Image (cartoon, rainbow, N blue to C red; front, side, top):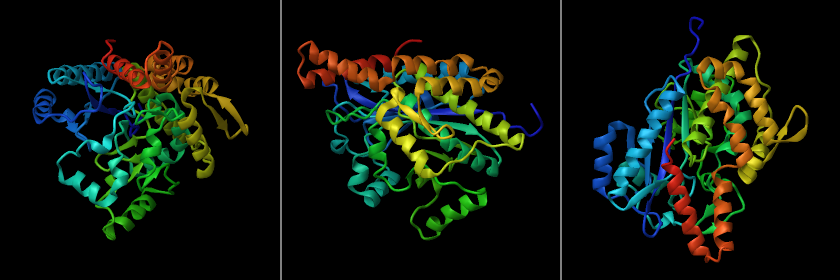
Length: 377
């Protein structure tokens, strides 16, 4: 490693819904469950906006072997402790039929302030995502990589989709979660910034006007973290299968390293107008791993299967250096077999074909999600 080169450490945060194992509906966590989780996992677990949500986070990781073991332990621990209360964690962008607007928010000042500020918009926020942080200590480097990484945000979204249902309806989208998030201010893809100074100055306009306290209230698909010296991917749905989560995280870390190599050689990935990037974002949201996305250089739509092969090829050196070739290669399986969203819709359709009423078919989807969330690796 060259002097001053980033180590590309990373961390993964996952949000889970909590469901009642009898009704399969969303269920608030009793205080004793959160207390037990905090006693077992310390600062690696925290409540989320709704009391039916819980978040876990890894420590700073240097290898995906470590990440697999730690995320597996976090998922297993939450599942075991929740099971003692008749509950289970569910890793998916949305619950198939639950209504978050009837679940009380977590009783914290931060969340009370969100309700007061955002009103009905935030009451719909029954969504769970996966956030991946990559350590990049240099401020201007973080902004430069973010500018270039916007091109790949739709690809990462397509590989993670797990929210086809909303309040009992098949939305026809593989990621309805983004439709909910897009109702919030300061979401979506960021614009391009020429430097850290321009980014910081832009955020400071809102801070000085007391619109927001700090950059943590900027919820872009990808952003410089407000707490750490990291670039944070936020667009991904919570991946139901742990192996899929690791694959998406590995691709993000490797793409960051690949873009850094370009910068080191006085090159860069071509940037495109936000209008065009958002078209790919929509296509990924609508079609998931079965999408065709624009290759803007070619000016044509390309299947995700081909795009996955291109990602594997351009990050081969990086995956080898970081020891995550297997995790990156898994995106072939995701594209071939589909994401959680595809499996959820298939499960629902199969249950209905077997004679189950829609409500029972949705419960079958929940059962599938609960099982896959705690699948043994």
